[in-house]
Length: 216
Ligand code: GRF
Image (cartoon, rainbow, N blue to C red; front, side, top):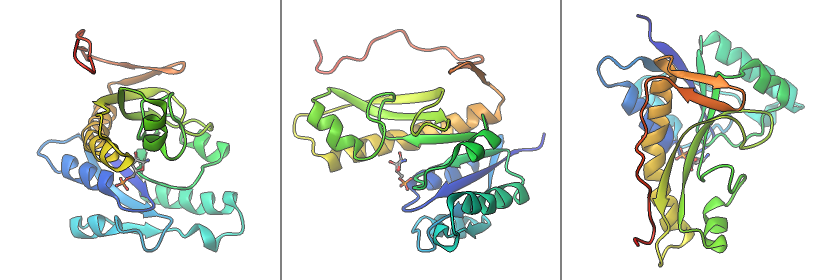
């Protein structure tokens, strides 16, 4: 069976891109990373694509007069690359509703919090300031509202007493690198069904045990 062609959009470091590349390289994986697009010519993450021999396109947003013109160029690259799924992985441009609707239910994002808590930037500092005991990350289908949309999967990590934003970010990032590939695999296997604003996962069973932090 033909593998799903995935395009990954980045702006920076690209550690989630690297995790996706590694996962898709495993034997019989149902997806392949066919294209990496960056809006930042100097994005460090582009090196991961280069090393893996994955085609790269740079679409610098500053070269365009407005957002729709930038998004038209982005859209053209994604279509030319035959993308069946688009993954935002640290892509730092807001996408407008027409673009998001064109890729509806084929466009996913990873966010470093347990959505719907802590949408937006500086999630770890805000989680620490709020005193939450558990934080984490979320992969979700993209909707025009920023950091909102049907949730595919989440991972929770504890917030430890001597955490600062950097330490918490590292713990969450390690979880990101596990759930983004999981979400892509589930999508590629055709197991995700968007029902209203929720996602049903075909053939999945979830543990019933609670996660306690601190332990009782
Ligand atoms: C990640 O924390 C991701 O959740 C957020 O941006 C960061 C990107 O990191 N959207 P990287 O570029 O994948 O290393």
